[in-house]
Image 1 (cartoon, rainbow, N blue to C red):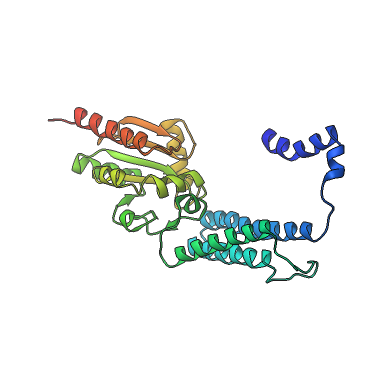
Image 2: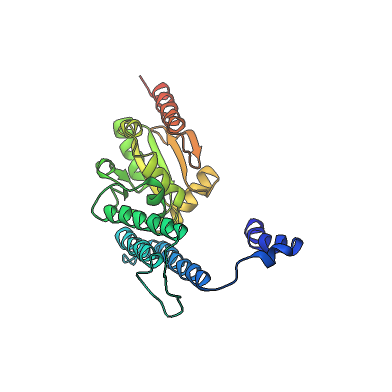
Length: 277
């Protein structure tokens, strides 16, 4: 909250220190109305993102991945056309000449809109964008579906089921503590979990994913994680031995895939050393 308040107060504080710069600022006019309209479009896009979080937790099933992606596509294309003067609103001044800055911004929004439109057809979109979209939620065994390679991985949603499978197969458990509204979780799933070296290691684990902010028995799962590991932070990764004993933790996200694979390797090695011969 301190950072939030400083960010909003700083421009006014600086202008109060140097009032001469206030007189040099451009006068309000058509350009300012364009800024207002563009910001209104962006606020609408953000609203779709945040209402999708509520949708995921409450289980409405309407503001899902495709709905939000489609809304962002339309909004981005509308901003691009608006900046070119192809869309006029009541308080707009006529766009007689498109400036270089306006053309550049318009092109950026149009390209971004086309990139999102490709995602609607099943094409891969950048992981950073995917992180801010709602997850594609499949059945309980699939969990969050991000691409075809992850669809083939069986994810358990109950600790007892995963533990029973680990004991049968003598494999360690990879526990993914996640949330429907967790952007960093989505980033990890889109940018780290999809790497071939990570997927290869995942096949050597019993995979367990616990949602702690929504879904079936989420409060009990959240309490289990807090009681067992002493944290409610997301994302949170733990490797457990086949008997349920904790081997190693990996709190938070990372942008270094080698760091994450090293964590998986340490868990696999420790599990092999502790397993009966």
